[in-house]
Length: 250
Length: 250
DNA sequence: CGCACGCTTGACTACCTTCAAGATACGTGG
DNA sequence: CCACGTATCTTGAAGGTAGTCAAGCGTGCG
Image (cartoon, rainbow over all chains, first blue to last red; front, side, top):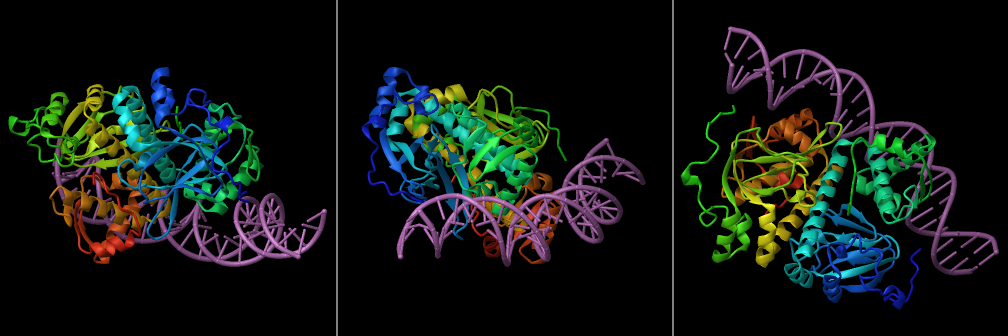
């Protein structure tokens, strides 16, 4: 299942600058003028590639960098002493990973590639230095971190107050809007993560996730075969999620 | 129970500077040298007092300031369109509120005083200006926001994986360590919040919270009468919370 | 004194989990 | 290319934890 492709560096074609990156309206460059963007490019390390299942960084190892997803998808999770895992987030292209680690010298979570994934690396020491010089970048970083807190609060809300159906509808809609923002279809996409991770993220058993998927399908809300999903009745799904709206990188 | 004390400003004695504040090892001053601290003092608005139940700020109103709890206790909560409330955090003296609002021009949550509470106000525009000039302060703000993300992830973990007993033991231990850090007793304290808020925060029904409290008492783990709590067997409580360790402002 | 609010306790119900087994898809090796 | 093995996903039945509904208790305040 894991295709062992030899090279670790992306081909030159992908090694474009932030200037040309299609994600510059989502990622860190969002905050910057052209000339300031050059300085961000000076510190970014582009073109790191991870295969499915590979660790981008590990919980409790020295914290060095934040990462922006360039392509592919990433999941972050924390592992407890007793070995339990909690998936804390799924990250799509243009989203930044590692912000929860800035309060320590060690990563607060583990980040794994859900599929073949290309990331840009921002060494924190240099990033912090740069934000001192570029107030806009500093502001944007505050923004992103604040957004991360909000998302996590929304997740807590979802976990504590909502039924299995509401949680799953919410996740589907969240993914939908995030794909759409990336100019992909918001109604027809492929789930980057297995049911297992969905279940873990939403605080459910895998079986429950599966059952809800089939129930949604029977009701004509979605069409799902494996990871391929088509949202057929967005309004009905929105009605199910009474409130949950996870707006990442908005 | 709510003593309506007329004045809104604290008496001069309390209106001390950050220099003399006993919380300077927890709050924002933590990051600063003496001379830089003066500049923080220039922007802080000290001595705002709120009675129990009063709103410090309201969700969706214009975001102007972050607040540090000086004395008392605060709860933050988000309200959904359908009117459901989710308590997102309890804040003790030295802790900073409003960080989740920095990604918007409006407050992301509502903050209410749980008892008579004294706060220090930091206007965000000035705070951001200042962090550009004081890299240590900027770093500390990153630290606090990151900590807030971690806490929220821990909460999500707690809500999705743990039983009612584990959640309540975790909350008691969290409060215990946070009181202790403030040089108060870690084994004998008064809960600042009603059962209702505990239940909401932990994603439980009030009745469940009540039942667990009595069960813990029968097992000799705690002694509780109303809001007065005495933790009698810390180790047993720690054993119950298999992993949850909420370290705020560590 | 009595009402109101917060807290406690009991009985019943429901949703989700757990356990178990079967189905499907995928990658590997023959 | 096919067969096998493994991982993922689905489906079914039984059981448990916490929720809901309802009532009683205690304290504080008007």
